[in-house]
Image (cartoon, rainbow, N blue to C red):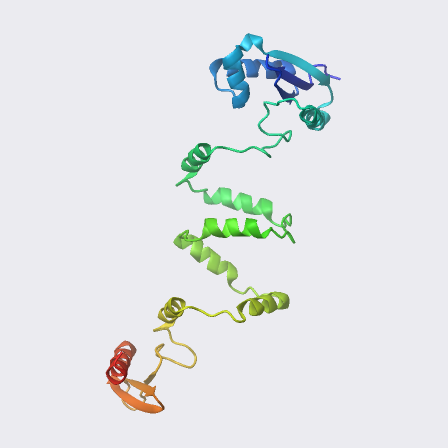
Length: 267
């Protein structure tokens, strides 16, 4: 067994310590000393201790030597053991080999976000990422708690989508069929749900002018007169029909309908 591979600790005069593991403890200690001397150590609490007590006051100790495959397991046991004993640990991440438990300040998060803002992943890299995740089912069946779903929804609310994003999202839905269970859930979610006036107005504006199977004009009350080839407007108020003339375009016919409705109803 390599006697330079194992778990180590760095302890300050206050009794607080940092637990780490390395394939080569000697090389790792050299890196620690260089970063602490320059003031660039990744563990800020340990850097503060070095600044306060001096680098020479820190005690570097080997705890145990082990195989490379056991490094993280034994490091985690040592972190847990000392934490349970009430020892103050400089380790920011309390899970060996991961960033779990690490909490960054708002300033740090903003710097990270600013560094990534505006950067786009090249198409070749996106394709590689996609190939790696093909067949990946690690989230299959995973149900997030309501508070997590609320946070995700809040972070996405009002976020504008790029034209490419919207196009790709629409293309992904083409030909997709919901399961019967999904359809039942969707119907149940809409039962008793009333749309407000603003929402209905947006839906109407989005569909206005679009031809459908029943209405070739795309406007309510507007139809094509086959005899003249013009668009005829017709409106019914209090069970009485009113003709609004024939016009060159569906939009003009619909405008005449609105004008006639205002004339009759006064609104």
